[in-house]
Length: 387
Image 1 (cartoon, rainbow, N blue to C red):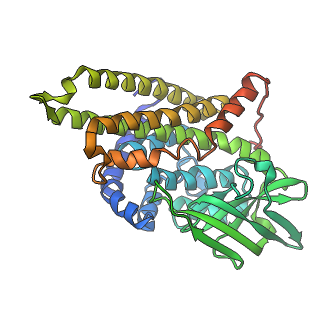
Image 2: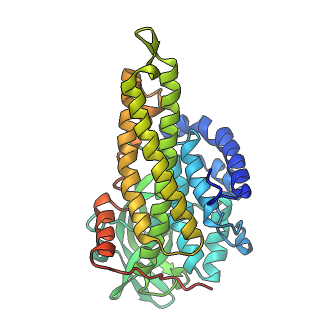
C-alpha cells in the first residue's frame, strides 16, 4: 500500500474491515445471491462498526473521517470474497443516497434520515433513472407540485438499487423549470414497488418505483428547489469514483482466485501456471491492475483534499469498467469448463461484471463528459455550499 496516500490508521482500518467481511459477508454471499437480497441484520452490524457513516460528522453518529477510509471500504468489500452485488448495496446507500443528505440536507433531514442511515436502521436509494429518460437527466418526467406544506409527486423511476427493500429514496423531480431532490419514504401511500429480475448482481435488490399522488412534506426537500441537477452533477463524481474503486477490488479478487487455481490445476504433468501463455496473460493483467490502482489512489487522495476531480472520476469509471470485464473474461478462460459452473466464484463475477459499464453512468456518457472537459474546455464547478 502506497504510504503517499494511506496512513497507518488507514492500514489498521483495512485490517479490521477485512476481518468483518470474512466473518459477516463472505460466508453469506451465496445465500444472499439465491434469495435476491442482503439480510438487514448485517447492514445494522456494519452500522454498529461505523462502516456506513465514515465521512459523516460525529454530530450525526458518523466517524468524521476522510475519503481515503471510504476508498479502503469500497475496495476491501469487493476484494475480500465479496461480490459486486453486495458492493452495490453498500455504495447505493452510503455513497449515493447518503451523499445528498450529508452535503445538502437540512438539520431536520439529517436527524430524521441521516442518523438512522448511519446505524443501518434505514437504508436509502437514489432515484434518478426513468423508463423514458435513461441517462438524459434533463428529460425527467417525475413531477413534484407544491401544495401548501407538501409536494404532490407523480411519476416513475427504474433500475433503482435498494429500491425494493430500502426505506427511502432520494428522488429527482421536476419542480417548475428545474429539478429538485426530494426524499420519499417508500412506505408512503401512493408508492408502489416492483422488483426487477436481473441477470447478475442478484443479491442487490433493484426496483421500478411508481408514484401516484404521493404526499411528501416540504421539509423533505434537499437543499434548494431547482438545484437538483447541479447537486447530481457533483455527487456523481464520488459515486463514480467509489464504483471504480470497487472495480479495482473485484479485479484483485479475480486475479487472486485465478492465481490460486492455476497453481493447483495440473495438465500435461505440471501446474498450468508454468505455461507461458497463461503466465504472460497474468503479467498483462497484473500490470493493468497496478496502473489503474495507482490512478485510483491518487484521485481518491485528491478528492479527500477537497479537489474537484470530475474528469479523473469519469476516466476511472470508464476504463476500470471495461478492464474488469476483460480481466474476468480472461480469468474464467483459465478455469476452463469449471469457470462456467455456479460453484466457482469466477463464474458469478463474469455474470455480474457486464452491467458495470452501464450503471452509474454508461461508458458512452463517461466519454462525453471527458470530451466536454478536454475538447470543449468545460469547467464543472462545485454545487454544494461548504460550511
